[in-house]
Amino acid sequence: MPPDREAMRVGCQRGLAALPHDRNLVFDRKVNALLNDARARRPSACLAFCLFLLAATQASAASFSDCLGGLRGAAQASGVDAATLHRATSGLAPNPEVLALAEVQPEFKTPIWDYLAGLVDEERVSDGRAMMARWGQALALAQSRFGVDEATLTAVWGVESDFGRSFGTRPVVQSLATLACGGRRQAYFRQEFIAALKIIQHGDVDPTQFNGSWAGAFGHTQFMPSTFLRVAVDLDGDGRKDIINSVPDALGSTAAYLRKSGWAAGGVWGFEVRLPEHYAGPSGRTRKEPMGAWAARGVTRIDGQPLPGGGSAGLLLPAGPNGPAFLVTRNFDAIYSYNAAESYALAIALLSDRLRGRHGLVAAWPTNDPGLSRADRREMQTLLMRRGYDLDGKADGVIGTKTKQAIVDFQSRSGMSPNGRACASVLAALRGK
Image 1 (cartoon, helix red, strand yellow):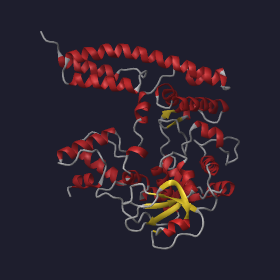
Image 2 (tube, helix red, strand yellow):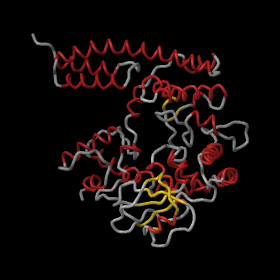
Image 3 (cartoon, helix red, strand yellow):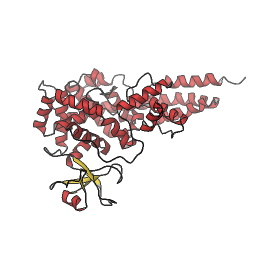
Image 4 (cartoon, one colour):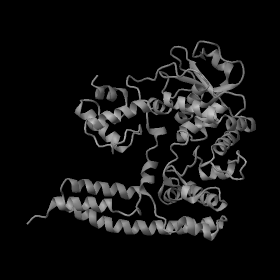
């Protein structure tokens, strides 16, 4: 009698769901490949899956345990006491989701017009202006002490955590241990892991609140632990450096970081410019030249006005010569150092301009299918759910796995390219236009 293939397939799926956290990204990919074979109702694949599962989970658990032992030793050698080590690492297991998220970073994978559409939208501008009014005293103090203007600080806050609404929910110590033992930049994350333990030992954070992003960034303005140890300040004067519960401390610490990163008080990040037709000259954020050199090449401000007389800047073309162009200064570089992505720095720069009351971009991105604001994304999710797609009942504007899968299916059924983008064409099709 042939084996019950459906029962074997279901068993494989249950086995995957019940896996311990002691696995890594390579392991997950192998498991998924085997599970796909099981879904194709291949009994031999299910047997291979089960055997692989048993061997790999045991090896992975041992590997992480050995690595964690090494991390404990390095932390103790760096001054972390035994009590802190026990409290923070007892029973610690890796989180494989962290390794998967490390492979997909939106700053580098998402078209810039999609990335900016969700970060520099009317909702964030309105919220940012409200926060500037509410926290004006703290912002003014941070600016007077460190020279970074209020709009820039508020823009960083808005992009990093949506003004404190989205800190991240993953335990920082667990995420950093996972990345230190299984990621691509293990040496870097080992140091961040040790820094996180020192923060706990110093009493700067409550361990029960020490949650953050997949990479271990935490607080209102999402500092990495080593950055916190290096530059965090106590702006509210309560004797603690607390970027989780104190907005003033978070804003002051961000101002201190930007100043140390080269921010020039009173200067600008840059501005949008207009290039002469068929421009073929130099470009690049780091290729700084005097404003006079750019003016000699025919570059003007976007409104046609001449460039300022002093200073130097690099020509940033984030979408190539056919998209918006910007001359960016050393202050843009200071913002860039916060996350090492030009799209990220541009989001903060453009949001800060909107918070100052200036207009948004003038030149259009080179696409006929622009990205969506968060309000439009929520509408898109609502319309997808009305069509029967399972998004866990959430229309939150976050384009996660289920939303992308629903978009791909809808696009395929609608004769569209199934790229999974949350874009204007998908929203229009869902609206029936």
